[in-house]
Image (cartoon, rainbow, N blue to C red; front, side, top):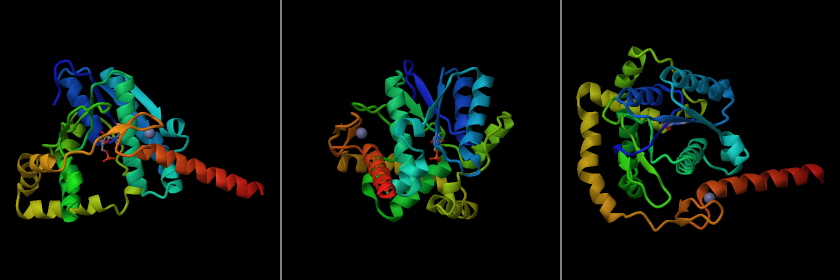
Length: 269
Ligand code: AMP
Ligand code: ZN
């Protein structure tokens, strides 16, 4: 996943997975820095609390933690961007995160972005994609996505470990983390799929890993061949590679700005 000359950027959310990953990579000798995105989620002070945990670990391992604010970069925090552009909060949030991780890495000389996704996360995503046969998504659900023109390499080093194993690793290394779930994740399908997979695992141990690893080994490469990613070209607004003329994040930003302008003019008239 990591070549000797790679410069690693760990996306740290303040949760157990990404903090555990950052700690593990530095213990293994990688000079990995962290990137925390302040999503601007004020409910339960979720964003400000999670940031403190990321800062605490940065101090302990003596590595740089970069902090980027979505409000500053996009003009609005994630919940408002999602509302104004009529997108589901989690889908808008995912798009903004991927966009800012990539832009930050490229602008600052990082060659690989590591995220804390674990086996439970990936198996649940796989289940969601399989239930709807979303072949395009399945074709790109791999633990390593190589760099492409304008896109940094993305890796998920913890995909062999279950959520429980990662939690134990983080706790045993005495790393405090935010236990609160994101307030927008309540009722999310992914949590339901995780629960179902745990029930299956209890009855038939090893199924979760078999489901995911056999997909990665046998199915994903076939799909990748059959459904090659459409030609990407630079977004005419920001230059990020996209399949459309304007990338989805720029479109989101523009829709949100238009809504604010309309509301202002209605208030003034
Ligand atoms: P999630 O999509 O919230 O399950 O998070 C998956 C992974 O994305 C985490 O393990 C982190 O590596 C990364 N991540 C999520 N939220 C943030 C954030 N606010 N800042 C930086 N990285 C994040
Ligand atoms: Zn753009």
